[in-house]
Image (cartoon, rainbow, N blue to C red; front, side, top):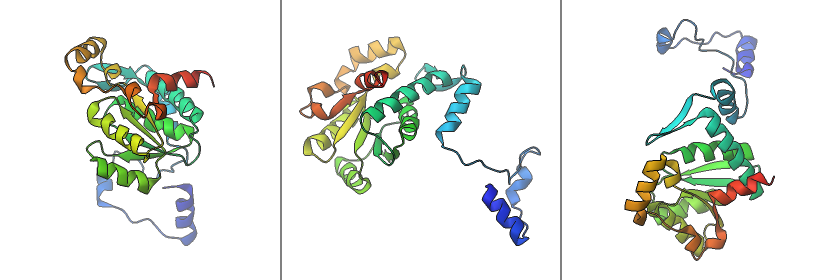
Length: 213
C-alpha cells in the first residue's frame, strides 16, 4: 500500500477488507506496508551495496556477483546514453534468458529509456509488427544466428534504425566459451560482416564509448 492509498483509507474512515491468503503471511510481514516510490533500478543498486559478493546470475556454470552485474549495468547505461538513449527512448530486448537480459534491462532503465521486450521465438514478421507498433529505435540481441539474422534483416530493410549485439560465447565459462567457438561456431553470426554493419554497435564498442563519458 502506498502512502497515498493509506491516507485515502484513513480519510474515508474505511477498513481494508482482509484477504484469505493473509493467514499464510509470516507474522513479521505486513500486507499494508508502505511502499516507497522509487526507480526500479534502485533495487539492484541496494543489492549491490548490501550483497555485492553474493551470486546474482549463474549461466551454464559462469557466476556473476551482484557487484559484477552492477558494474556492467552502469557501463552499459553510460554506453546507451552515448548512443542517444534518453527519457522515453524505446530499446528492444530480443534475448533468451541470460545475464545479458538482466544487464540491459536495468541499464536501459538507468539510461532513462523504456524497455520493449521481444519474444526470442518471434518470426521476422512478428518482430517487424511489434517493432513498428512500439516505435523501438534500438534492438539488443546476441550474435547467435537464430537471433541476429532476423535483426540483421530488419536493419537492412530499414525497419530498425540501430542494433547492439552482444557475444554469446562471452557469457560462458572460459573453457565452454572456447569449445563453443570450436564445435558450434557455425551457430554464430559475424555482425561486422553484415551489409548493415554501419547500424550495428558491438557490445565491446558500447563499453568503450561508456569509458569516454
